[in-house]
Image (cartoon, rainbow, N blue to C red):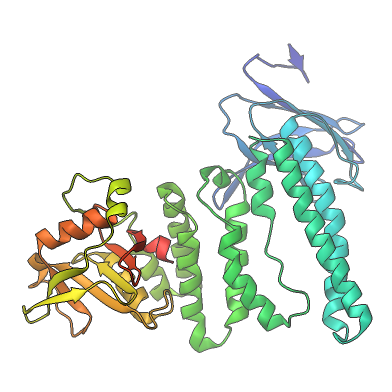
Length: 424
C-alpha cells in the first residue's frame, strides 16, 4: 500500500488532511511530553493543501499538533486509528470535517461548540462587570450568561457519555474551568476560582503528560494564586499553598507526582523562589518512612469496631494519662520521627489553615520508642505504647504511619488518612 510515494505497512497509521489556503506549504508534526514539545516529522502540502503523515504503531497515544502557515496550528488525538480531515485556513475550527477517527470527531464537536459559546460568554462577562447590578438588564444578562454555562456543561457531559471510553474525554475534561458568579467583583471571583480550581483538575492520569494541558493548567493556577495575593509579603506563602494543592491533585499516581514536583521545583528555581523550591523538592512520595503497624485486621472489619472509649498515653515527661475519645470531636495524628509527611501533617493540623481545629481535641502521638528522638514544647504531644498503637491501628483499619484520624463525639471514626496530599 502506498501513500505519498511511501510504503505504509499494515501496522502503521496515517494522518491525512486537507487545509484549503496553504498551497505547497510546509507542515510540521509536533509531540508533547510534560512541559517538553518537539517536532518529529514534516511534509509539504500540494497545490490543493493535501498532505499525509505516517504514524508508526509504536507511537504513544496522546495529543499531537500540526503547525503551519505562520505558526497556526491544529491539535489531534492519536489513539491507534487513522485520522482524516479537511478544513480551511480562514476558519480552521468552523470548517473542520473529520471523516475518519472517532476520537477527533468528538474532539472537534466539542471544540466547535466551545469556541462558539465562549465568544458570547466573554461578551456577556465584560458587560456584567460594567453594568449596574441593580438594573433589570443586569439580571437578564446574568441569566443568559448562566444559561450558556449550563448548556456548555450539559453538551460536554452528553458528548462524553455518548462516546464512552474515548481517550479524548481526558483532554475535554481538563479543558473545562470553574466559572465564578458573574456578579462578583474581581477579587471575590479570583478567590473563588483559586479555591475551586483543584476540584476541576485532577492530574492522576498519566495520559495528560502526552499533551500540553498539564503545564498550561499549572501556569494558569499559579497565575490565579498571584491575582489573589499579589502583595510582596504574601506571594511566597500563596505560591507554596498553590503548589501543595497542585501536588495533591496528582492523587496516588507517583509518576504524575514526580513530574509535578520537578516542574514546580525547576520553575521556582528559575524565578528565584529557592525557598519554595527546596520545600517542594523535599516532599517524598508516598512517604519517607511509611512505618508499618503489625496487625491482621482488614479495613472493613476494623472500622465497624469503632475506636476504644479511651487510650493510654504518656506525656513529654513520661507520665501516663488516660485520654477519653468520646464527648468531643478528636483529631488524632499518629506520626513518625524523621518523617517529612508527619511534619507536614503536624504543621497543617496546628496551623488551622488546612483543617479546622476549633472546638476539637487535638492529639499528636508518637511511639514510646521515639521519646528520646522527638523533642518539642508542643502541649498536644503524647507518646503511645506498641500495644495501644495496635488497638488504634485495628480500629482505624490503617497499617502505616503517619495517620490522621478524625473521631466523632460518639467515638466513631469519621475519616482516616495516611496522606498529607489527601489532607491538602
